[in-house]
Length: 566
Image 1 (cartoon, rainbow, N blue to C red):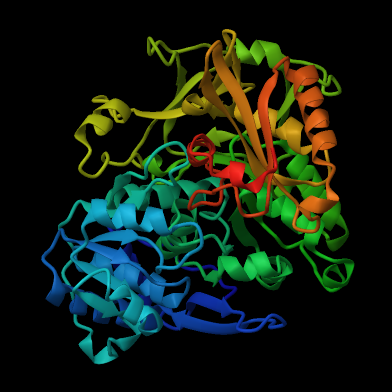
Image 2: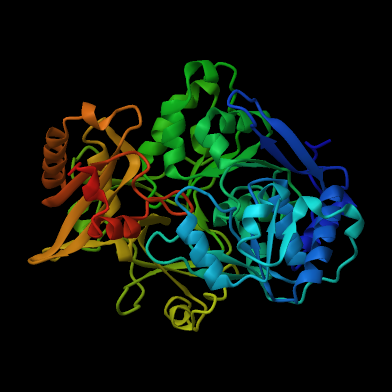
């Protein structure tokens, strides 16, 4: 029954209206399944909501929330990953309230961010589950536990008049998190754009995901898109993936035409951590598309993942480099499934000067990048970051976006809103990129650029060189950044060593010499400081990316000096 193509839905203004539509059109079809892994050796315990059951739960919780807050008030979602999170989010929208997708207290490395976001959003109500009720009650006077609201509370609700659906707080990779106002129309439009880009508007897929639901990609791909199209969404907890990445691959294999997304590190992690025994009964030939949303996307990651799982039937053309950001709801552009990965070898020196000139792929000074395809249902242009003049193909500049998915601005930050969201509807992304052969190529972030002796250096380019220098360095767990010095900007690298190697086993001076030589030879840059630190020491954003800004702050504060690993 679940393999049948869902009927096309008429256009609705909000996600709760789509839920109600599917509850009437296909009431017994599965809507959301959460796969729990209560023990280390668990193969997964499935809990499922049909569209009818989801609609009842959404209307019940929405009615309860409407008793606690006036329309337009903020509701913080402090639920763990699972069906209660889905229900709480959709119920908040159905009640005409503004959702603030977050996570329960105690998430490692995210305590300061949670405090900052709650102080900024000032929620009137917190939504959680009974398991987290005690710890959450310390944060807000009004708390609603989703699993304690009875079905009998459900009642019919009028479609909400509110313009803003939720506040999507940025991950904080380059600044303090800011809440992007995402309208009901924005999220519906972006869900449709993503469905179109990955072919899910024409062919039914199953959305399979472990990305956190408080993250923009997790929210849109695992909740919004399946709700708009009436697709099954299969969820698992991010921690379950980290403990055993094969769990994600088994879910991909178990569901027809699976569509999923993950950051760059996850593909490398699967390639290195999934054992031959775990691969034995794994079939991945039915996977429809795998999104890689890291910036920039490097072909080597896709190659390593493909080499690791080609024997399980994985088709190379399922790997789809993509680009997006919270200010655009999430999705901007993507390579289309079924098309070969577009590879670009660019001259590093020319790239630093703002020109994307071809180089030989085997040239050690070449930068290898993947194309992120073309936008769907929106316009993208490359402009000079200073003058705003539109640039020609092959010139590197700031990526600007315009479309129905672009958010309304930042919550309570008028000045920042004016800087980023232009009066003509364009979004200044702060990301650098170019267009070659019709493909959008993301090269880095304006705020992350390191300028040494008048030359631009992309930190992720330096980091790629460093992590390939020594096997004891942990991939995608290092940060390169600039700090002020007497004679100009100095370059610092803070890198974690692997979990399988202790610091005592590493010849740190020899490693540092190798890193300095590699960076000097390839980039012409002298590193002022190289620190090797324990696993988990380099801070990450809520989306799992390394936070260079926070790493820099900790370095300047002397946090890493205590480790004695310089």
